[in-house]
Amino acid sequence: MGFSGIFPALTTPFAEDGSVSIAGLKHNIDRYNQTDLAGYVVNGSTGESVLLTKSETERILAAVKEAAAKGKKLIAGTGAESTAETIERTKRAAEIGYDAALVKTPYYYKPAYKPEVLVAHYRRVADESPIPVLLYSVPQFTGIALEPAEIAALAEHPNIIGIKDSSGNVQRVAETVVQTTGSRAPQSFQVLVGAAATVYPSLTVGAVGAVLALACALPEKCVQLYELFRLGQHEKARKLHGLIVSASKLIVSEGGIAGVKFAMDQRGYRGGVPRLPLVPLQDEQRKRVSEFLAALEPAAMRA
Image 1 (cartoon, one colour):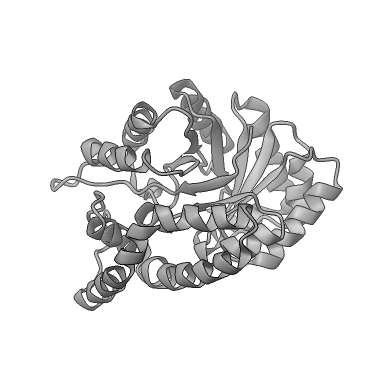
Image 2 (image 1 turned 45 degrees about the vertical axis):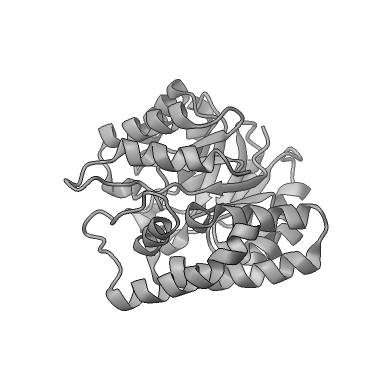
């Protein structure tokens, strides 16, 4: 199963009373269905998954499955601290109809999580999972990074088909591509990146696509960059990459989830505010994002 292209790391809209807004979520999916996004990643970091209850995560999975257009690939974030809970969540995502599971590293007992422990965890999950597994390395949140050698070892498992690398380190991406290609891993092992600022250089070293928070607010631009690369139009791709780097720095790096949601609001999506303890943008940040989008919008509409 191929996962090339651009996937938004879906946000979770909340109603005024703080509950999950399924209507808002479906509104966003209806709009995304009109773009060339490859599919959707649900209950990941940008979706505030660690701030959701189990019942909320299942409602979200069901709502996205129901609203997604035919042909959009669906990836569910199912990683938990325990191997058993991860397997349970993964099986539930499969029952709902998801195509793959995105499994973050456990992180609470950091001193115990040696490479061999992480490899054993993922192999057990992959053994039990009814759907393909994508590894998820997001060290800025977990404090744990999957190293290329560990990834290559895991890539030999027939049910582990790729990784989302959110480290922002292009060298690490390149090393992962080299090691998984040179191992006994199948040629279909796929590397996706999770940092918008690294998409273009990562594609040049062998990544097949990206899972991006920025794609929630600017899906057209993110897809356009991928398509320009795919068509070999590198000069145009490099120019667009510069714009995406600026957008990602302001909206995602500096604004976080609150920045992504505010930018979505400005573009007609249901963004809203994050769930406590995360807080909305301050007035000065809102002003800067609004000004950036106002300058960008004419170009975005022509894309």
